[in-house]
Image 1: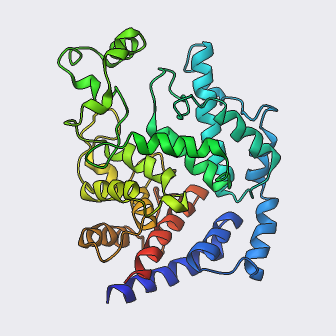
Image 2: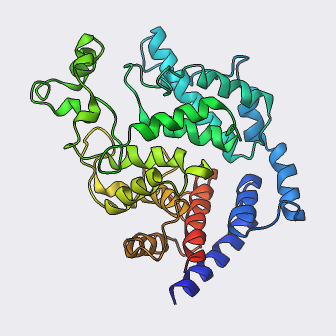
Image 3: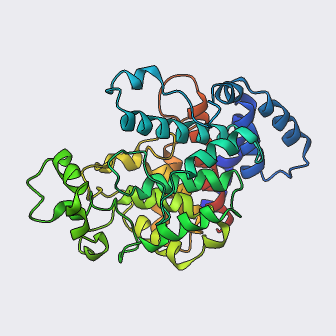
Length: 351
């Protein structure tokens, strides 16, 4: 019964989506939801349209020669013109634009994208993680999962830099199966630091005081739901890791916390984030979590999946789409529907 209901939703929504969507959305729905072969004429037409899609071309045309993009004026104006602050904004802008280029179907091998990815990985440390985009010098597993997702999407899987990044992420997995932001979501809770404001604590961790602590020793602090999701977002796209013990432990942790309040107040703490439809993935949500979980193979054989899947089905509007606003369906809104269909399709395949 559930399989019939899900398949009906997929058929109706996918058919409506390809009739009214951008060429990139049409490509992903045909390829990943309807499972059309790459040689299918509809796929080929979509690829031709994606190649000349104006929003995609504007992003590429706006790229600097070194693979970065100018920081949007609105963001630049809110921050003092300090070198590290500007670098932080530059890094964040790169991640955002590379994700858009990936979703707009920029095929692997584009020299401009390769230049940008090389710039991104030029910030990789000897430990394996990429510094930033936050300018506090502390490791950021969630942003590193984001970077790994992008690099895998552009087929960099043979590059040893990706293996070093993935190895670092796996090495920092915690006993409960999840991940935290090191120092900020573990050391921060020690009695000697609890009275400090976050900015005071960060400044202290930029001194030799940081060397006094190893976050991996603080296993009594629960992992962060959304840091875990974003790490899995990256590791999941390395096919050989998808069914690894590391990814499966992480997926079990995330699924076991679905709909629950995040224990860390600095990163999407409210349980309402689970049921908010948000794009892109780093705006953490239940939809993004289901994308990660179904890709990791979580399906009807795990009874914990039924409630999130039914929530996703119920979140569909009468017109057959999932949306984050009452406005006409934007590219972001179309992508939300595409992501929902991905998750439902993968779940239905296992029924």
